[in-house]
Length: 62
Image 1 (cartoon, rainbow, N blue to C red):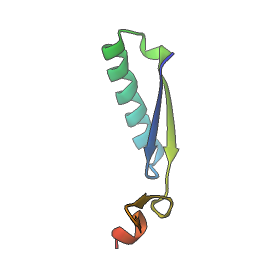
Image 2: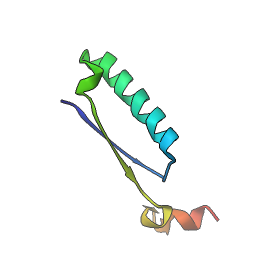
Image 3: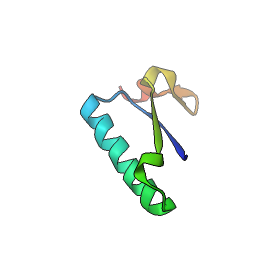
C-alpha cells in the first residue's frame, strides 16, 4: 500500500479532491496497482511555518 504525503498550503475541499484523485490515478498507473491501494495524506502548512533560506515564506510573499 503506497503512501503519498503532500505538504502544501491550505486548500479548499474541492482542491484536495482534485489533488488526491490526480495523485492516486497517476501512482496507480506508474506502480501498476489498483487506485484503491493508494493512501494520500495532505498536510497543510501555513506560510509562517516554512523557512526558505533564512527568511520565513510569509515574509517573502509581502
